[in-house]
Image 1: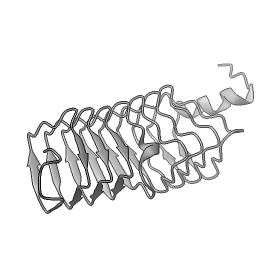
Image 2: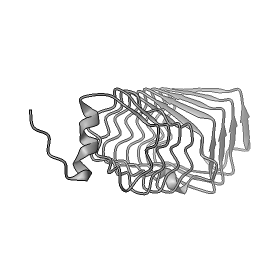
Image 3: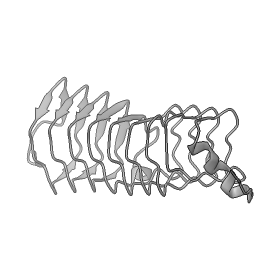
Length: 194
């Protein structure tokens, strides 16, 4: 796909095994489209819209976007490494399942009821996010940043390697599982002795 493509709206289409690496795509709308085994690495999306789209076994690493909307998208078994989701238009509604999201940033986004199930989310920035009722089941959060984050009723059961300071974040009614939940005591200066 390139900007010489005359179509601007794609509906109910399946894109399979396409390689758009490094392309700049502007003014395109994707509605209920499926992307399967596609490589979109380092693409730049300008004034685009993705609504009710599914990405499966895709690589979206280092994509960039300006004035681009992601509404009710699902990423499964995909890579989206180093993506600044912060730059997406609001509201950003996405489900990430079995994805590699390392080194990305969602800082400041409203991700209420966000889904991050069995993902690799190391070094991801969730600073100042609304993650109320978010689901992090089974997700590796090594080095992820939670500062000023609302984690009310979030589910961290089975999540691991997180470091959440309970004094810098809202965690009322959030669910955690042992032994990883012991990490919540680190920010309190509590010493645990066996």
